[in-house]
Length: 419
Length: 139
Image (cartoon, rainbow over all chains, first blue to last red; front, side):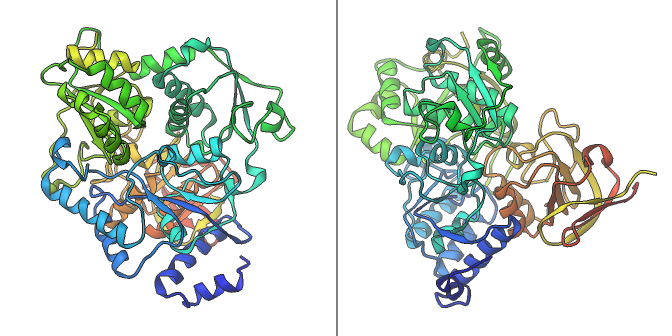
C-alpha cells in the first residue's frame, strides 16, 4: 500500500504507540483487500463497548488509559444499559456499573456519548461524497444510501479509523462498487407502505434475496426519514446490504439508469403485497387472543415525532398488568421528550422510555455473562413494529413474536393480548 | 478420486488443521451462535447444537449485524473461537476486522464449491498464506 509521508511517520511512531498500532491494523485490513492507499475520513460512528461482551469495557478503559484519543468527530452506538436510569430495564447493578465505566472512557478519548443506532437523527450528517468509518448496520446503510457519504460495514476497526482519521480506500468507498446489482420493481399500493413495520418487511424481503449486493428498489415513495431508516435496518438483517438505491429519491440514483451506472439488467424481481404478507406471517407466531408480555417500539431508535405519537396514543391510559412496554430512543431525544411532556404521558401508562439501549442490545439474552447474575429473560411473547427486533429476539431472547403496526402494538399493550 | 486441495484467497494470515463444520447458508455471528459456549443456536441451521470452538467454520457468506465481529472477538477472548473461517463469497470487512484482532485465519472464494466438497466432521487444513484448503480425511 502506498503511504503518504505523514502516514509513514504515524506508522513509525511519531504520534505515539497507540496511533502506530492503529494505522498498522488499518494497513493490514487494506492489504487484505488490495487497497491502494488510505484516505482521510471526516466522521466516525464508534462501536460502544458493551458490558455483555466479556472484556470489552475493560479493554476500552485500558485503551483510554494508554492515551487513545480520536482525531475526528466521533459518536457512539448502543450500550447494554440505560446509563441514566439503569433500573428501568432490570439490569443487574454490577453489569450497569461496569457499563458506566465505558462512558468515562469514551469522554476521555474525545468520543461523544450518543449511544444510539441512529446518529443520523441527531444531526450527524457528513457531506455527500465524504468518507466515514461507521459501525451499526442500520446507520451504515443510511449514510451510504440516503446521504451519499461512503462507508463500509465497520466494526472494531472503526476505533483505529477514529484514532488516525484514516481508512483504506476500498469497498463502498470506490465508485465501481456503488452500482446497483439487483433490480426490484415494487408493485405495492402506496397506502400499504406508510408505516415502520411495512418498510421493515420490505427490507427484510429484499435483503434475503440480495445478500451482500446492491439492490435498486423502484416504485416506492419513502417520504419519511424513519421509513428509510426502517428499510435499511432490515436490508441489513436478512442480508448484509451496505448500500441501496431508490431511483428518484436517493442521491446517487436520480434515474434507474444512473443507479446501475448505465447497465440496467434485463431481469428484475417484482415485489408484491404477498411478499410482505409472507414476512408478517413468518414473524408472527402468537395466536390472536393469546397473552403477550412485552411490547417493543423503537427499533431502530425512535425519533421525537414517533415518541410524540406514542405519547398521544397512551395519554390517560394504562397498559395491562404483566406487560413490559419499552419505547427506545437516544438520550438527547428523551431529554427533549421529557421537556415536551411525552415521557410523562408514556410512563404514566406504565410503559417506559428507554435510552442508550434496546431489548436486543441490553442484558436480555438467553445466556451471557452469567457472572453478573443475569437470568434467562422471562419474555414469552413480544409484539414489535420492527422485523429487525423480531428476528433477533427469537434467537437471543428465545421468545415468540408478533410483527404489527405501531397502533396495534399499543392496543396489544393495553389489552395484554394479541388481538 | 475427488480433488482435495483447493485454492482460496487469503484474507487473514495463519493456518489451522481441524474438523470442519459446514453451514450451507449465510451465517451471522450475532444471533446464530451462543456467545458463552460457541454453540450454534440458529433455527434452521443443520449444525444447531454443535460447537464452533476449534473448528474450521465453512459457510456461504456473512450476514446480519455489524456486531458480528464483536461476537467473534468475545468468543476468542474465552478461547471459544473457530480455528479458521472459510467463506464461499468474498470476505466481509466486518468479519475480517474481527478475524485480524482475534487472530483467526480467514480465507474465502475457493476455486470449487466447498459447501458440497467438504462435509461436517472431516478434517481440513487451512493455510492462509499459501492460499489453500486441503481435506485431510474423515475424523
